[in-house]
Image (tube, rainbow, N blue to C red; front, side, top):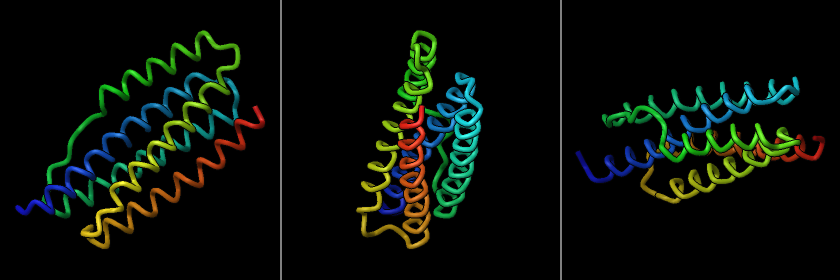
Length: 149
């Protein structure tokens, strides 16, 4: 096993871990809002991240690497914070949208960092670019939703 493959596997597993966190975070956000439009948006984002996770797992396995299971401790803490903030906030929808923006910006940065690796296989670079572009588009939608809330 080459260092290159191990590095790609590690980077993809790091993104996969954050994808699990985002999926669980969007599930929590959907549970914590009564606004039907936001609930639908958060549920769609949860499904999107679920799909991203499966795509990433397939890519990791394609290179003979092991897939890490589960999310991060940081993600669990973030979801607990979202629960607490939603409970105490008078405007929980705006708070959850702000947290979504923060999380999506962090995801884009991580994707960009991994995409800087010029040794990425073309299929990996394509997959990551597609996922990152979807996150960027949704980031703009979240900002619009925040303006409406």
